[in-house]
Amino acid sequence: MTVHLHWFLPTGGDGRTLVDRHAYASNSTGLPRPVSGVRPPDIDYLTQIAKAAEQLGFEAVLTPTGTWCEDAWLTTAALSQHTERLKFLVAFRPGVISPVLAAQMAATYQRITRGRLLLNVVTGGDSTEQRRFGDHLDHDRRYARTDEFLSVVRGVWSGQPYDFDGEHYTIEGGLTALPPDPLPEIFFGGSSPAAGPVAARHSDVYLTWGEPPEQVKQKIDWIRGLAEREGRTVRFGIRLHTISRDSSAEAWATANRLLDDLDPDTIAAAQQALGRSESVGQQRMLALHGGSRDKLEISPNLWAGVGLVRGGAGTALVGSHAEVADRIEEYHALGIEHFVLSGYPHLEEAYWFGEGVLPDLAARGLLPRIPAAPLSAVPAANGRPGPAPGGAPLLVAGGR
Image (cartoon, rainbow, N blue to C red; front, side, top):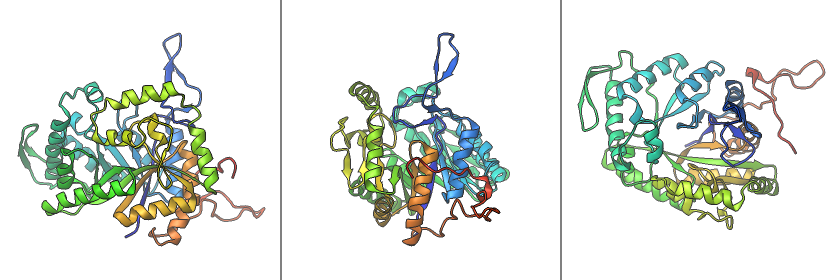
């Protein structure tokens, strides 16, 4: 069993800091202005990241969903025209779109991109965020609705008229005239008792945030047991940040630099806001560090510093390229196949990981093929390497 490596598209903006500054703020005229140190998620910058991910050998890129992000469907459809092989793990919320329309959109997307769609179903763990989109269900009822939603999606993908009569949806003769080919794999996460049975019934890949290995194993055993009762087999993935460098000391120095912006008031405000989340997964992330900057290495090479100020995935693999590969191999031994990775900034960190860790994983037999080196090309007349194939941007991070 080899690993599947995916990267992240920061459609809410990118930068060299963990502080979640949004890409724009108002000035005295009320018009948006760029915030210093933040890269807006314009299509040119996101194209750089997507092309880098494709060139380095990542299989797909994940897009987030929410108030502070660009729309994932539109953004990735545009980026598909600038890439050739890269798949797009499109995040969306079931409660704000018809399941039949979502099934139709997915089918169209597959044809436009020639089969490069993966779906990340985000039920939503924050009622305040959900209400912004007109969704007023409570936490557990949102998961019950997601259960029905995915039943309808799979039903109308059959290509035959499909009827459904549930608490949240009533469908008469729903169908996609041209079902997607292949059917997109469904990635799904959730740590609550309400989430587990939905994952077992519908997900192809159950996605967890980066908890220590022993906690991840418990989740795998939980979902695997629920899936067996449904007569299904579910595969597993993990969402992590990475800070990989030529030496362990360099990596930890980078992690410590990311903490420089985090004064006590910033951390306290972020922790207070994150503490209001109904998401069980978010509460598990918060428990890993308790809001303290002390003892952030919660497991070998697993650093919880990201979660001090950012919601969602709050841990990073930190270390030399070999150490990060060791940790990936450790999670893989537990049953994790899909690794959805990210780093700040996303363009530079894609290169650190792609040029440092991917060759190590390939040498260990954990990748189906050795990715092409970004600099491999026909030599120019002066003997130096020519442009990388595919037009990928070439970037050498500072200090290397």
